[in-house]
Image (cartoon, rainbow, N blue to C red):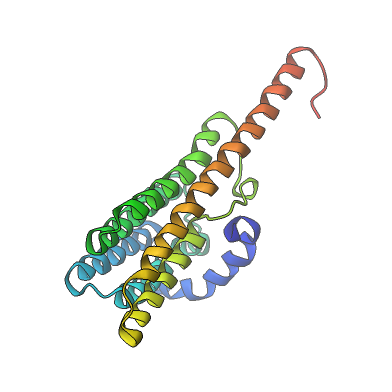
Length: 217
C-alpha cells in the first residue's frame, strides 16, 4: 500500500543512499542479487543461532540493501524490463526463504505457510492481470504489499527476540505475528482478486462497446 500510494516519495527516499552503490559500480541486477545473498545468509545463520532478534536485525539490513536496486537503475539509466522481472522473482525467493526458515526453527508451520501463500498469491494476483491488460502499480494500493510484509516480519522478529531475552517469554509474539501476516496477506490476496474482477470487467465492457461502435469513455 505504501509503495503504491507514495511511490514517488519512496523513490526519492532510496535514491540518496543508493548513490553509494552507484559509486561502487554496482548494476541494478547485482544489487538485487546482493539482497538475495544477504537474506539467504541471515536465514542460514538463523538455523544455527536461532535468535529471532539477530534475524530481525539482519533482515532489516538485508531488505534495506535490496530496496536500492530500483534507485540504482534510475540513477544509472539502466532500467530494463528484465530487471523488473528479475527483481520480482528474487523477492518471491526471499520471502520463501524467510518464512520457511522461521517455520523450521519455531515449528509454526501452519501460520508461516499461510503467510507465504498469501504473499505469493498477492504478487501473482497483480501479475496475472498484467497479462490481460495494461496496468500500473498505482492501480493496486492494497493492504499488505511486500514493503508492509517486510516491515512487519522484521518488527515481529525483533520484538520476539527482546521479549524472550528480557522477560523470558515464549515465542508467543512470533506466533502471533505469523498469524497476523497470514491473515493480512490472504486478505490482500482477496482484495486483489476483487480488484482484478472489477478491472477486467471494465475492460470487457469497453471492448464490447467498441465492438458495437460506441465511443469508449
